[in-house]
Image 1 (tube, rainbow, N blue to C red):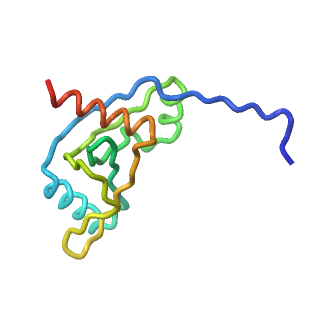
Image 2: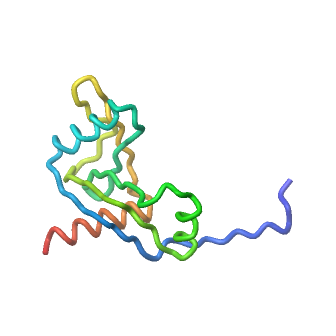
Image 3: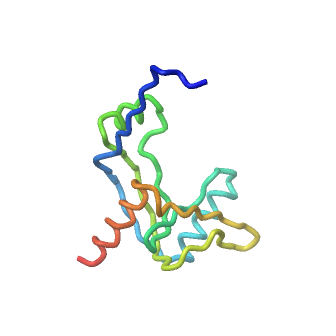
Length: 122
């Protein structure tokens, strides 16, 4: 049963702050992610608008993240990316299969990819 007094509010991020941006060729990006995964750190790649990338949050403190999101700002410590014109769900590096998530419908990840594309044309 749905409560009559539940209020739902959609409040999208208004600003994305990237503290670092690094471009690698695809092979180097995939090797780096594979090395992180070998150290048993869960990691995957994002894809949107022809860009494959890792977006690392600036903080792991959930209170700080919530506070920033409430203000409409998402902070990322770094984004490392490469060009990947066509989406593919997995990339194989040796025995490691790295998952790639299609984030083309995510406002945040699509915005990051579009910003990178515009920036590289300067």
